[in-house]
Length: 321
Length: 218
Image (cartoon, rainbow over all chains, first blue to last red; front, side, top):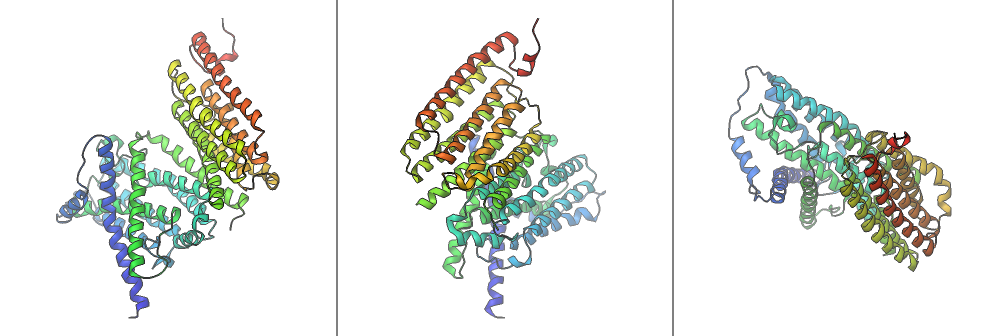
């Protein structure tokens, strides 16, 4: 095989390794920030890796009343998230497999992952699973149209819904990429990220109080390697959402030429962006209390307003595209 | 450097718009006042950048004035009013929060539609500035008419005033320093009057809901 085939494959493997490794770290970083703000030391940064290792070594137990759905759901959900990884430029522009799909596909894959977990949580017939599924699908119904609108807001000026095309435009323009529509779209995206990844005003990822659980309620039925996949999947989803934000909002630092040094630099810059982004989100979380469930539409409405305003400023005022 | 300042100017104006929208979705009065303070600060930054870009030294003074009066003093007064009055801290609305947010979007579109033709004649050559300023003005007006409590209506008036300031600067570098100074002084007086008026209102009627003022007592 020639280098033109092997190169992108190696790069893709590297990106996968990076994203899979950084997901749990982001989760534990968020927990650490929250612990520190409450005057606790918090668990070690590597704790999620140890948990995953322990859980992966254990077998799974299934409820007698559950069907094949419960057995398959964690793998399908994880696979859907894995399939979304190449759609985002992590290190290099253009992304090695970026042409296989655009961000609408990404929204679809996230929806598939959400859908299959919700279905599996209903499968065993436990009350909490059903409640969590119901809430999660409701939030999904609110968040997904907004997600598409935000993608159009980002992609409008570039005339594309493909993440690496949008990011390439940003790298080419330099600081000139910053504009009022971009600012509006970024704020809308951050609001959306809170809903999509189940962060604090919407869902408390640390809670085990049944009445307020959303995502936790759906994983109650799982143990062992299935639970490991679901928890790893949460880290992966967080990394995906933050990686997309990094690529669309601050695309500078992505390597545009091939070379080991460029690659290492891009790796460092992307890690910094992800960690910085998550520090910001966790900082935001420590300042917020959980909202009542029926206030979630307030958040998504604001995101709609911001994204639509961004589009209006792009097309009517800026004469973009 | 200049292009960077132009960029920063656009971003500061856009963040003023974002804060105006956020004002529409707040349900607690103190959060509303905090957001107003952030908006005033970004307005002050916008003014400072215009002063730098168009070498208009008196705008520096205006920026400083905006920062001190609109971002520090007025929010401080309002916070004290809220604390002293011990009114229910929630924002009561005639239009629901979500409807308000969508109306805010509609107001931006209206602003773009209405002032779009005027944009080429504005002194400050930034395509988004005038529509954004007009949108902030309209959103302030909407806050004023759609909120029940006097304190929130004062915030609406202040947001509206921020929009007027920004629009004035975008069109003509402001209304002249002395007019602006008088305006700032007026605002302060307004805040103090509002403070006393609200205290009296609370004392006489035990609430600050203006809707209830329409019927006669006794």
